[in-house]
Image 1 (cartoon, rainbow, N blue to C red):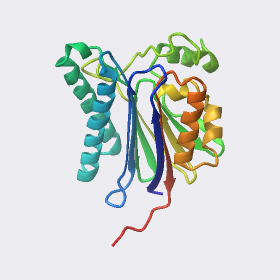
Image 2 (cartoon, helix red, strand yellow):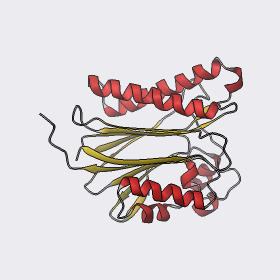
Image 3 (cartoon, rainbow, N blue to C red):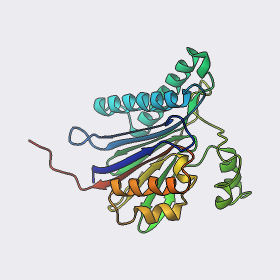
Image 4 (cartoon, rainbow, N blue to C red):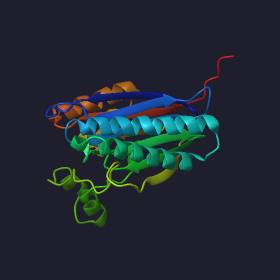
Length: 253
């Protein structure tokens, strides 16, 4: 189950001048096992958010692809190193441009190796797992409102409408050291992995995401989800990347 079918879509928010989201996908097969998926949602003035998310995704992808090719580090170590490098790149960029000194970005990274999903996460983009007709959120939102939901002070439905729902407590590019949430999840046949920015999950509930994904291939599901978010108002940039593990193909001789 090492080959990966993927689909993605990114839409500029109706109230945005530029799309500050970035995303990336790479299937390593047949040269190596697994695949890489990233989504990032930038923030900052003077198009700083656009720059921050792009730099973070580029830096993380370079690290993962290099380390997968070299084969010296474990997947969790690769993911952790990717976040450190991405954080450094965003900090360096902010330091040379006074107009972007407050820029930062979320980053959610999924690396599949040997039927296991290795996740790295900072911010309020999300990773979900769809399995057996159910949907599971695999990441925690690093926001003030997210902490309130986890403590039981706020319901998930209320969080989607809370005025401080976008107030981050952790992001890349804000501090020299960043704490990355790392986790791993065994993948089963029929699983679907979904990564998205808050422009999607801020408007579309998990049950609605589940209904949009069910019975659709990744490309059609990504189109359906972004279309639904736009119909709900689409005020923020909307990015979704969907992965469905497939049975391994025979490599070309």
